[in-house]
View 1 (cartoon, one colour):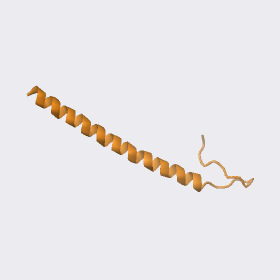
View 2 (view 1 turned 180 degrees about the vertical axis):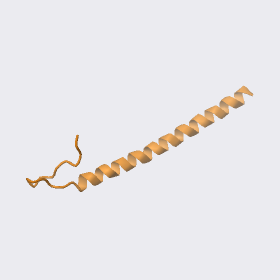
View 3 (view 1 turned 135 degrees about the vertical axis):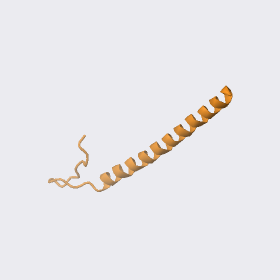
Length: 56
């Protein structure tokens, strides 16, 4: 009975980790797209230069 529970626990942990990693990949892709859009669509400041669109 204990080996069966260990196998089920391992499968649950691996499934959870796989789901979390896939979700993190999607979040990383979304952040990359937003960053690229901000880089391309940034507005020009008064001097005619392109300004930074972030406040870091």
